[in-house]
Amino acid sequence: MSSALRLITPTFKAAAKQPWAVRLSSTSSHSNGSHMPFSYANKRAFTIKYLSFVGLGFAIPWVAIGLHWYRPGGILNP
Image (cartoon, rainbow, N blue to C red; front, side, top):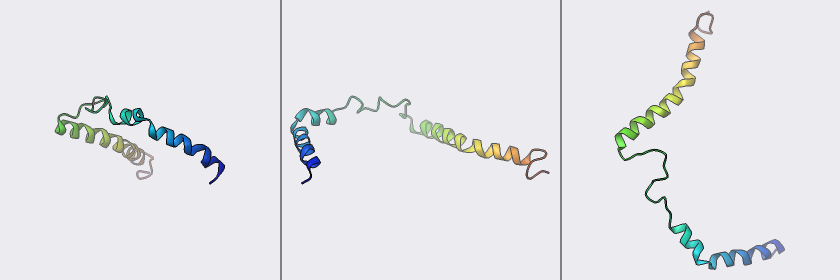
């Protein structure tokens, strides 16, 4: 066993024996979803809002490219 592993192993064993470490990880104040910055109780409204947000973010660069290509003096409109 290497010297670094001998130094680390007792620390892991001591941490594994502490019952409070397990209790802290198993109980959470956010178990009901209150930590989310939005409400998704109405799944249809959430789906529409999510798809429009993501779709708009995806479409903006394509619209910008189209405007540059088709403007007077652009690539596709010399």
